Amino acid sequence: MTILTKHSNRSLQILNLVLIFGIVQVLRKLDLEDPIIITYIRLAYFASQLIVLAIYYVIGLKIEKSNDETTLKYVEPAKPLTNEQPKSVKTNYRDYDREKLKEALRSALTGAGVLMAFHLYFGFTQPLAIQSIMSVKAAFQLPLAQIHILGQKAEGDLRRPWKNPNPFAIGDANQPQVDKQAIKRAEKAEKNAKNKDD
Image 1: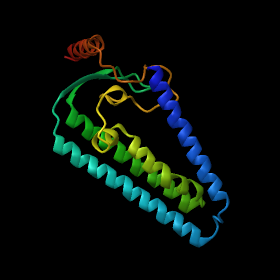
Image 2: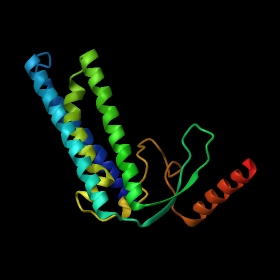
Image 3: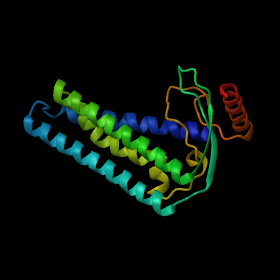
């Protein structure tokens, strides 16, 4: 990870904290027990989720329109706390982006479902208000959005395969590898495992 990348990630984390702090300060001035205010917060949250879905829809259209079949080979790291081995992946930019879009959509829907459950069953309103802003911001920060909507080049941190989001990970042990030696080792290990099974 380069010094520039570290500073970039740190800046995003600081910006997120500042935004959350600002939203919390505003919410402190509101009566979160007031049904009218709760209704407005719910409407804001639903609107933000519609915006997120619209962003993903546009990304999907852009992926299909570009139809980029450039070959992409990399090694997917083993899942933490499992006995699985790293596996080699051969795909193309279009299919890779499709898969990442599906993952983002699943994550957004799961997060929305959990958040609404906490709101409806436990009465937590503050997280709903915070996510009304943070979910849209997070959608635009995805490499998919930066490339297909904001028009940035797939270089540097935006070069495929993208790093797995894990702010607590140290080093690159849990990240995809693109060097030829890593790919050869993974392919050889898979071939040996297949021969043993046969």
